[in-house]
Length: 335
Image (cartoon, rainbow, N blue to C red; front, top):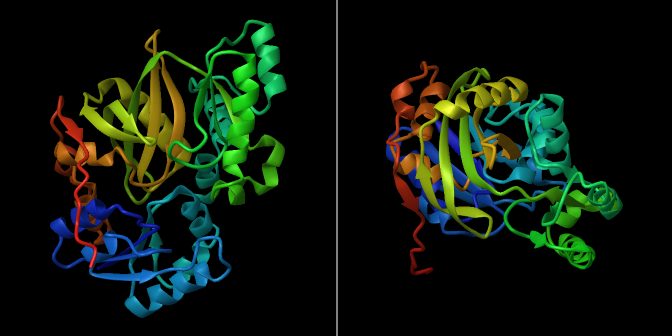
């Protein structure tokens, strides 16, 4: 069994999770620059930038040479690139563990995520593509300050601001737009220069990260929720495992609508009325998955078993409730 993790970044712990559960599976990683994850993997290579014309070609050739069975990407934009070339990987027997291309595009574009939630009747914060639209809603008293400003595409905390009045709205909207076009987000936003920034309703709420698990045929298995207690740079820095009963109905609905394979990472806001609001979705192992893993979940083990044509083992998704998990920064010698 050979598994390739693309756009692995610094997520060496994900490599560890896979290597801990199978002596037979070989873990390969790639990234556009060398990272600590390369040291942990069985095999690694520097790949072209995901926007380069030869990126997919290089992956296809690597998969042929190393007999790769499955690919998982750890970066949202990479998922769309790979999904657009899925047939090329299918032709050489490689299983892309993600979702249909339509779902990948919805997940990558927060405006499409907002429209998707409306279409399937899931609550979601009111969202606007322009200052003019937001101001009309404010004047009509259908939405109020504070508001959230954030990029339409991307992950992490680039360009994320809270605004309390019209002046801040204008200034920070323009600042966010400048940050978008001075970062990697400029590639995704190139076709939406005047609609590259979103203005979103601010909800007083608790935020949860859900791992919605489907098998490799797209059938719902379970959901593992975590409360996001503390955040840092857009990722969960301190998480708390909670019971999943209140999230199952929503998780099943999203599972059926997305038809994803493996993990769908979903950010949820529980507002003051205790309504669950869909915020964002990603078809990959997310920054809050380690909270579930440390509490007993073993998605890598189940994925390898699925790839080996074994049935779902629900023991792989049992976890302790009420477990606080934080991330540790561990210095290492580079050479």
